[in-house]
Length: 186
Figure (cartoon, one colour):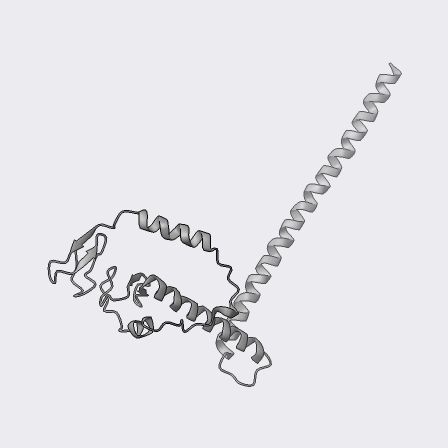
């Protein structure tokens, strides 16, 4: 019996040590989680602070962060030019009131009915060269995917349309307003 008592005693001792270690590891894991959460809050606050500082001082000419401000301005310009190029390629413009995409030749937004501003889109569309220098932007084109996308676009059925009762303009089936005269389609 002495052997079994020693074995039981040893097992109990090792089990208690194992339980204590597991409890310690669990506590350490909880503390690491709290540290990570606190670091995330710090990073979010720093981002908010940085944006607020930028918005407040972006027009200052004598700030010590002028070079960073210039990088941000250039990045914003690149984004704007790329977005304009996307709009040209897709033959769309963005409604300033609701932010939805509409046909480039629309006069009124088909989603909210707002009158759209005339843009120099048609003049820009007729130039052969894009007015954005995308060499600064690292983009890898997959020509095989592009040709597959084009082929799949051509195989899709034509979108259903409806006619505006006020002016006779052909509209997409889900248009809530006429893109030519602004009449409600409801």
